[in-house]
Amino acid sequence: MKRILVALVVLALSGPAWAGPPMAADAPALYKRSCAPCHGAEGKGGTAPAIAGKPASAVAGVVSAHPPPMEKLELTPDQIAAVGRYVSSLKK
Image 1: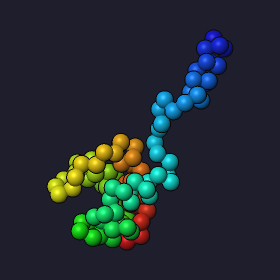
Image 2: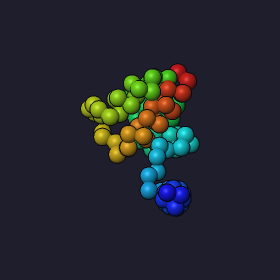
Image 3: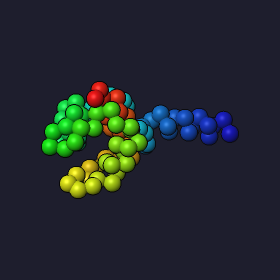
Image 4: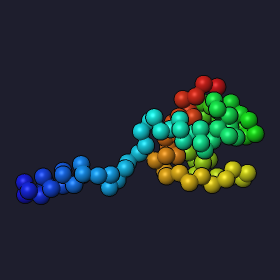
């Protein structure tokens, strides 16, 4: 039993079999690449509405639904959640 447990720990630490949610530092880069061109660098609007300070769950819901004219973004659910948290932290 102890060998199995050790093997599982070694396997888990040996590589990124599951990368997990992006680090918080990734969210600003994801926002800059995927959202800022339309919503502005600070989320205060541009060719698309202002989103700074919106609730993270609302942002994630819109990104997941990608209503027109928004293009579908190739983001994982964890990345979408991270961007939502980042947007909610932006000052209005």
